[in-house]
Image 1 (tube, rainbow, N blue to C red):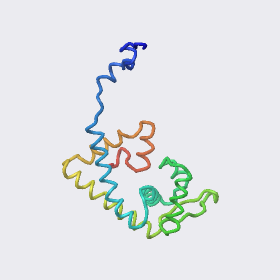
Image 2 (image 1 turned 120 degrees about the vertical axis):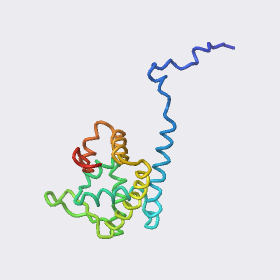
Image 3 (image 1 turned 180 degrees about the horizontal axis):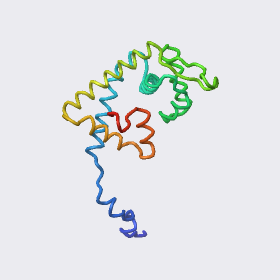
Image 4 (image 1 turned 135 degrees about the horizontal axis):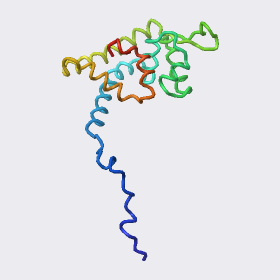
Length: 175
């Protein structure tokens, strides 16, 4: 029988900065539960329509940005064309989204929420706004600004300016 050294089975030492930084399990888990409940409100309404979270995201951004191209939507959502096509097909078939030939380039389809799509997008936004409003009340004055700063800081640095521009939360506007 060959005896192995105990030290050879140990992983190589990590840099001091990694050893000192314990995982933030409390924040990781709080973020998970907050997200679960935030999307859960909308999930229950979406279920009535036979839709899921992907449908919600597509409907949200198409409603907020009428005339959005499929390419721009793919860039925002960072999903595959196949995933988007499946979801779009359902939303179009059920008359929540309308796809039209592009005004400048007919090869680029532009997406618009129908009247029914706008109504559902608003209902979903109101559900999620109620949850945010309750949380903001608990945080007190300045809570919304601090929450927005935190969420922006969570976005990859290379994407922050693009996201801020997309959502219209530039320096002079409240997030």
